[in-house]
Image (cartoon, rainbow, N blue to C red; front, side, top):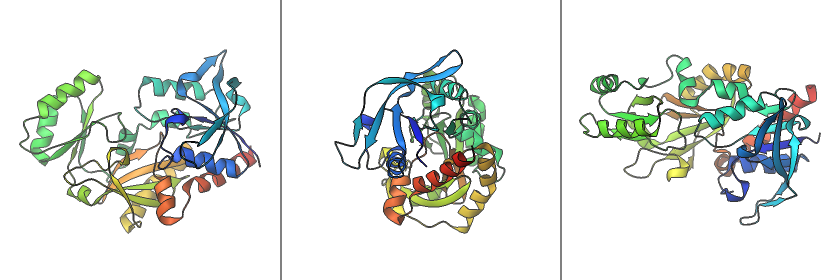
Length: 315
């Protein structure tokens, strides 16, 4: 079946194709005979109740420096598409949330991956809190006194922005670190959102596992190892990817959250596991598929298209 696929993403011209999961999704779709059309979130519009976008048809190839060849600019009613991939990167701010409201106008008649309503309802660092017993001790608040009390109780902590991504703004604070006030002031200057304080997990030195799930089922994992002396293992900030197997605990965590992912229509999800703990459920534009394919031969995007095609065949 040939599908008309629109991709909502950051500028395709500027991506690093070696590690970009969205690009692999596009390669896989094209190999199956699907037509690709791409636009950036700022080209999305709601007009008369219709979700419109200005973008270009595109063909892709796995060639650095010549990975995308575009057709002419045109405006489309996205209801004419079979599938829209919602794939721009965080931050998960009001601009991001607004795109999910606009895409609500077409889903599920046009299948949006992931379901825009549920992307909006499942902020990545908040969604995980709905599953008891999977997280390390965690506090989400703007209350400075509460954060100090949390650190006094747990010792070393990690401080994170609530709606950031890619490891941006993540810092470890020792039990006696004098910089907590300064960091909280910086967060307050950036925005009004609460921050996350989490008990530091020493196992992070062995890596932060990214597990990819398609329609609630785990398809594989990579381990992201931080550089020496660092705690951030995200690939975009210098973490090193390596092959890793799923443990019994990993499978237990996936079994805990998988049915809810499936129920919500969150078809492509990446979870982060440190030691025995689930720290985030990434539903916006999870990465890791390129590295998984390189290490294991498993193409998570091909599995995704199997599922998408099955859903569209029933429509």
